[in-house]
Length: 427
Image (cartoon, rainbow, N blue to C red; front, side, top):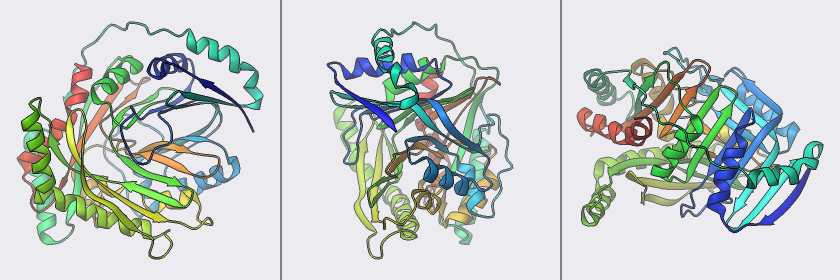
């Protein structure tokens, strides 16, 4: 049970900064920020969860079964992540590529302290064992101040060269032309060894220049995720499930006329539309595993949404589920998300593993939360920096969808466009 305290506040943006600064004392942190991005499906402007009362950490083997048991027993708020490599729990797949980060495959925790912000209303929820700390914590939050952190330049290296990238995408195109797959998301890693950063400062810079709807700061001891994700993986509201895959990207321009032209061209681009529609079909199929018969619908097809660095093509696919369907089952039957795999999904994941050189880990996985009622909301971990503070290893990856119409050179340029914000904050 939790003790709940509600407050009305005057300056939500200032409070978010104070919450993040105050949270840094804890071993476990999840901070989620919508950046007040206009979106149909949202419940909070920002959420902070800190200080694990209980937790689950495991590799991929039996991970979903263990998470199901944990979620059913706790029936409380749970925050954490699903790494891409949980695919190996669902299908007969492997992850043998290089891993410099060494994140656990799955981690969730039941926080002692939760803070929920919606416009000017602020709610604090503490487990009873620590509710006597609510007022003193509130005073400490209000007195938190930002510290100036000296900037540092990180020497970023590229895991595969441009030539290697083009060769690998050409090989993927051969798979497509042979009929092995018809779309796959191919990713490459940028990394830094012996990297010493201030994770909170880097996150704040990344969020400031990106302002995405699914931003996240995550910490579990030495493991950090600094995410500027624009993409929702999956949300459950009562008996409704919502998936919003992104496929289709265009550059933004300072000139208003050029920027508007880029949006119009993206909306009508046959290659970008085919990418998106293929994944919509895959998502419809994934959702059908748990859906009430006939309830899977495409609410929006190939909508164009603008972010700070790029325009994106986003579709919204929904379904209805019976109350007897477990929340974790909905995740398991749709994971990993189609926008980061390809179609057919299993064949695409096998080819991805052959051609990519880095274990994806948390990149292209999902971070989010379960509510006590069994609802949930998870982002897609993209446009994100991952950091192991113990080993001083920093990594970010970018990718794009390869279809029969893809040009390897253009896909490479799209990857660099998506990496732009991460380079900006690390240099």
